[in-house]
Amino acid sequence: MRVSELKRLLDDEFGASYASSVAADHQMGALGGRTVDQAVAAGIDPRTIWLALCDSYDIPPERRLGKDRPLRRDAPLD
Image 1 (tube, rainbow, N blue to C red):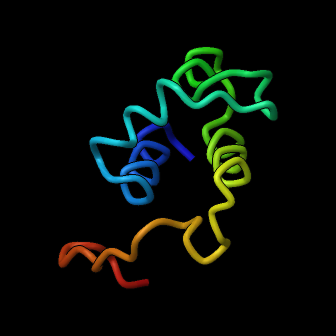
Image 2 (tube, rainbow, N blue to C red):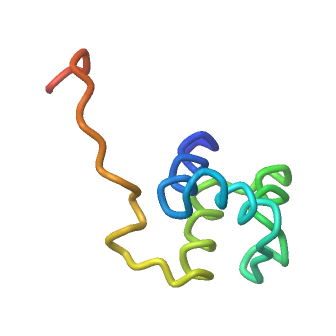
């Protein structure tokens, strides 16, 4: 997972305006008391950060992959 995907998942789950607040302010014990922003800056894998956030907020498994998005028309179908 890339940091851009982590940010997309945050926006999907919390909404664009609240996601930035969550990323800046919510500390997670699983990440040593770091926030999302601090964990990214420390080089922690974005997937690890996302899963810690999901556990912290009790996000159900069916929402952990983000919103479904339509396929791009130019995307290969193989």
